[in-house]
Amino acid sequence: MRTRVKVLGAVMLAAVLGGAGCAGTKKAARDVESAVPGLSQKQEGVVTDVDKDAHRIAVKSVSEPAAQEVWFALTPDTKLERDGQLVTWEELDEGSPVRVSFEPAAGAEKTYKVELLTGQKAEEVKQKAELLGH
Image (cartoon, rainbow, N blue to C red):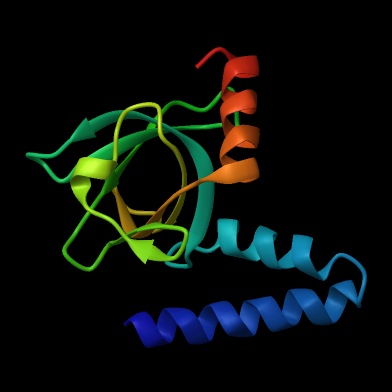
C-alpha cells in the first residue's frame, strides 16, 4: 500500500512539475505533498503538550496562525533528534521549537521524525510563536 501511494504521488508530482516548468518546482512539490493524503509533510511549531503515557505531542504551527494545535502520535519508529543526534522523551518539553515530519491520519497524525530545533532556526520559530501569541 505504501509503495502504491509513493508511486501515485511520484506520478502526480511529475505531472505537476512537468506542467510547471522550471520555475516554482519547489512550491509545486509542496502543493502536491499537502494535497495528496499519504505523502509525508513537515510542520514547524512549538510543543504545547507532551502526553508521554499516550505517546503523543501537541504542536502549534507557526506557519498557520489560525490553525489549531495538532496531535502527533509517536511510535517506536518515530525518530526524536536534535542536531542529527537521537534524543529521548525526557528532552522533549512544552515550549520546545520543533519540525515534525508526518503523514496525515485520522486522529493523531502518524509521525516519522520530530526534530528539536536549535540555534538560529529555533530562535526563528520561537520569535514567530511569540508574535502569534502562543
